[in-house]
Length: 418
Image (cartoon, rainbow, N blue to C red; front, top):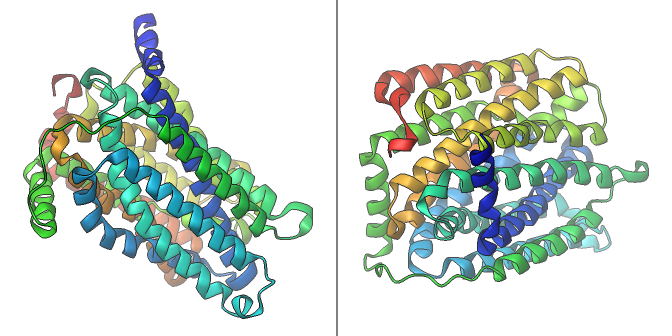
């Protein structure tokens, strides 16, 4: 076990990886603060509606999907480091827009602020499509193949630590002194995005000349989609995460659940929203010591099943700390799925196609978070908050049974032999 611990920490001796992880953390922290604040603004200042929270997910997901048809092509053709820095500077611009909108000092903006926020969400969705299509392909070029699973674990850990800290800070600052302070959070976002960009500039990376993308955009996209659909194992894993996240997207409606079911405050929401990320970080330390390579398929299926089970359990909670615990456990099991899926993507995809495959994966997984949020908001409107959460968790378990039936070889997957 000691050798495993040593090998999992040795990766930080790679300066490029170390700077990448710091850039990843500060970027995630900024994004999580930004999206949490938008949710708080929409719910507490404008609508008090779970459905409107679902709409925020939909308005980000649709442009995200549309842009993903182009982002993978760009990632495979141009310098990935420069693409990431450009997307972060664009997110700085979005924070500036949100800052101005939230000042409530420009009268004509104040009258359309609600709609203007949704306009920025659309822009963020487009930008994040390019960011998502580029991050994992860049990471794969910074470490050796035998460290892919370890790099995926620490990459996931950096994301989840940012996801823990971001909502807590946003919720605390938003409701500080009994009044709303969204503009202060958006100003902090600007600084964090700039800090993330700084660390990515420190990554010494020159795109290796492997090939030159010669296909047109449409043909290039078709090549990426064909590759994914011909790789049955890859398609099964992506589909499993897609539908699990789609039906288990209870986090989006947490402001409404916290208010109407748990009868807690916006500050309480901040901690509750980080519960899955805390569970994911705790699990990440376990996975860093014991990477999920052998019996990866069985681990993946059971992890998604337990994610669904504890999502259902969360739906029945009326006690704040019990709800917190259930969400924490869902995050722990979800991270097993994230690390295994990321490892498969890195191991089974040639470098010259990583951008396009990552973009296809982003359409499946990245957008499913936001569309899953819309599904949660929509079902909450139809069924009520509690039944919608229980329904989502139950459907996640059904998805595992269907994927296992369609691809029985998945449970035999062993990453140490890939």
